[in-house]
Image (cartoon, rainbow, N blue to C red; front, top):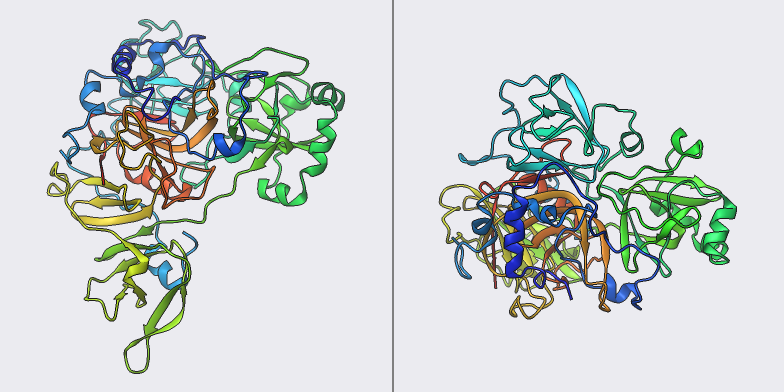
Length: 560
């Protein structure tokens, strides 16, 4: 099975280094395996029951050399290997808990050696704009095809650019400086024309900062067809047979409410035009009005939904239309970690039915209700009173019912230098974000279900000290389609790679945070993944979909 470790063989590092020198082209190589039949009998329990963690494969159709270009510099080996071998180099909270965790905006305290500031634009004047028309429009440090990659835009993104090209070396359409830094090549990946079909259809883009940057749906069996235009009822029936009518009938009002209000159908589609494909996206085999079915055990982020012929359709990020009644709408986890805005130790309620106490007339704690399961609190640090610990919100909680962060320093010295770093305990399933020695955020996570086993032999999360080297607003994660645990999860939110293909990322397909669950990655509730993504380094500039920087990423320390 291709999981968070099996695809990370020694040959991968060579691919990463090779990707550093790849040019602005995208190629038309191997796709995502979206087809009519994978020949694999697999239900969602096996496919989605275990969280995904696999090398990013979108956009499908890239050259192999581009496939893992996240670590695109000569520092790849250092960035993707441990600094030291195994050592460091909820439910909605009650109103009292809300006082500790309501302000969820990351505190912006920058280390002295952080990456260039957002306004580090040199002499360029960004008085024009450029549109991305590819799944990845790479942004280079210099206006030449073998320069280091800084990040990329996704199809539909429109960002500010310089009015004049900086040159045409290796790029006939010209290299244009973009905000806040770097250059893009105008051609197959970018256009100066905003009426380009891809720019018109995909302009909505992700909702950065929100727990769910897209509306997410999970395929049912059989998976939905991938239509390349608004299909007529006859075309739908021809493609789907009697299953269409049954599917429409079983998609009830509750599911429609969960999906949210429909968007206006673009005139482009109402005119009967076919959906364009971003450069680098899987095109598939055209059959009738569709390109085959989605993969089994697949899931999608939708940039828009439409009501058409009496059923809901969703527009995927690769610009396919899927009948949403062939899916289940993903439900947002209520878990939201605790932001530590005053001195104290973060803790998470780890059991149901935990008594919440407040001081009575005599000053002694008395039970007044229950603390919500997985609610976050900040402990004052005073000695326990009859097994109860006091919170900064004035409530008292039984210490035995909490997962309490063990405030520590990292062995690499980031804490002593006052820099940001992330601590992950596999045994506690607890993540704590620090600024120096001060915890600023804590939440429950789901690490690899191999627990403390060997990551090379089990689905365990790798342990050691690493640096975040690449961040993606969303990306595709998949598993080996030849096994019973195949999955194809599109637009996994807020991915932060820290070692080869191991990453911190949001999970919209389960709500088991606080228990081991994944294939090796560190799963976070979507709201927590969004917070951590905004807080950590490298920053992803406005309008960009991903950023790479193996030298200035936030440290991640994973231990027992």
